[in-house]
Amino acid sequence: MSTTNRRMILNLMLHNAGSHRGAWRHASTRIEEIHDIKHFQRLAQKAEAARIDSLFLADGLSVEVKAVQHGPIFGFEPLTLLSAIAAVTENIGLIATMSTSFNEPYNVARLFASLDHISGGRAGWNMVTTGVQRTAHNFGMEQLPSHSHRYARAQEFADVVLKLWDSWEEDALVQDKVSGIYANANKVHDIHHQGTYFTVRGALNIMRPPQGRPILVQAGASDEGKNLAARYAELIFTVQHTIEEARLFYQDVKARTAKEGRSPGSIKILPGLHVIVGATEAEAREKASELSELGSIERSVMSLSNLLGIDFSVYALDDPFPELPESTQVNAYQTFYQMVLKIVQKEQLTLREFLTKHWIGNGQLCIAGTAEQIADVMEEWYTTGAADGFSVMPQLSFGGVEDFLDLVVPELQRRDLFPESYTGRTLRENLGL
Image 1 (cartoon, rainbow, N blue to C red):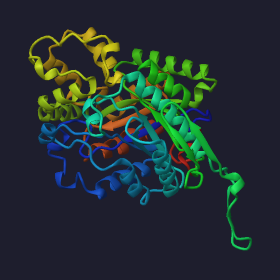
Image 2 (spheres, helix red, strand yellow):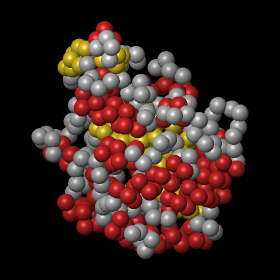
Image 3 (cartoon, rainbow, N blue to C red):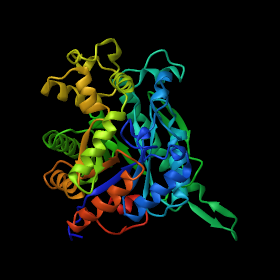
Image 4 (cartoon, rainbow, N blue to C red):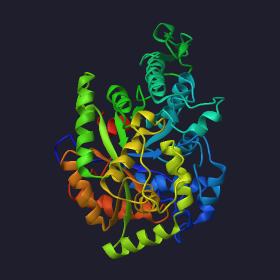
């Protein structure tokens, strides 16, 4: 490993069958196992053996009933699943998504403090604001709150969670049987938070997390999202299609982080990377072709509609891609809106062509090739200021995860880009944060 402090960070996103929406139908997928905890534990142990930094679970809080016929949506609740994974792993980080729009800070602070203790200091919280209208209906709301409202709430939400984690000083726990003092009451503090969205007295009813503060992760690409990341986040999961776009995003976020008075190196940017690995390029492309035949156009229309807040089902698939509204009129996920906008502005596509080429496989940067070809792309992005690492999403969970871990990771290690062993005990230590 290089003597420089900087090195590539690898996060593995776990899926039931794979990141491709048709993966559940692929011949390699053992369909009877995709909802079995042992499947996820097995993937986690393989990832840890390969020295992957962290595992990540996305989440959603609603389901479109007619979408369930097209494959698995979300599986287990992330913190529950990661607690089970924590029991069979020792070093790998455990990052869960939890919404700031449909939760309360006290519960979130307690849940992640608990996961941090259960795992020995390996927890991370992916803060999302949730941009799906259907979800609001599951929580007593007629309308999804506006984009600006969601981010204002998220900022105060993060403030409260941090205060709660800090409500126990590092040495507050005494546990002295002789004196009869379990914890020093002078070192446990009510936070007395009173703000626009929350009134929370505190203190937290669980001692300080092993990391002090679990790792904070963010994934928004709007100005509000990037500002939230610059203020709080230590990892950013981002969606970029080209290296040029990724470099601009990287420079923008690092500059915003500096304006917040933080070191630009204190925030690590990890673009999403969908991969299909083959022993040869032809083999990888054959796998990609197989998957493209298995994806559902109907489900992709539903997904695109939900994430952009626009009903694409009213448009003919073979007509030109519909003109998108201004970003200020979109009250859904700006990250995906910006990605789609850039693609359709650059390419003259029908709706069907866009879905087939850029969405059925889940969108974002996608590479089908040999380990060397995939490593070439990762190295270029990493060394030329487009990424600090990657959030890797194998398009097939059965076999595809192993292909990445067994073939691509050793290639990155041979290039002195990725370490061969963990350097610390906690996720924060291993990431050098």
